[in-house]
Image 1 (cartoon, rainbow, N blue to C red):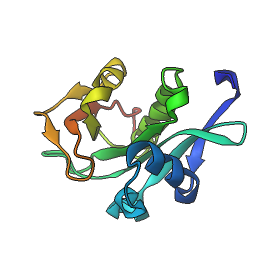
Image 2: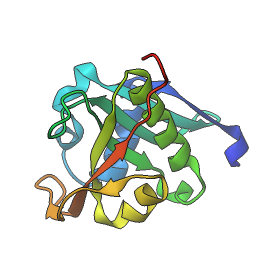
Image 3: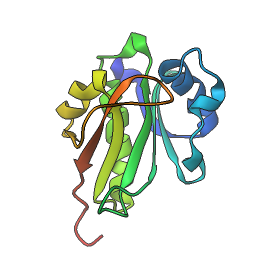
Length: 152
């Protein structure tokens, strides 16, 4: 199960939902892992052979003063594979989708325990810590300024 065998690609919601729910909302009803923006969402998955080991979801969602921003949600890595670089690969794939769509900025509400990961990828904290109603865990809003290719 080495990182060389990992394939990162766009995915369908039915391919990523179970992992996202198991990692981010364990013990909660499946409805807790359903996002209202699902019809506009693009899902990314990382597979090691036939096993999904990481996923993320991105979609257009305004940020204050940036109506064409995109949002990252549902970033999940199988706990046994955390720290192996797979999360970075999935995040890069998610960012590439937003860049291709012309988004100038991406944002997310990151778990406070994951801030080091996001900051190492160029994201910055953009507001105070808060507790989310759906997880009861501390989060902070984070943003990533995107550089779009010339002529887009």
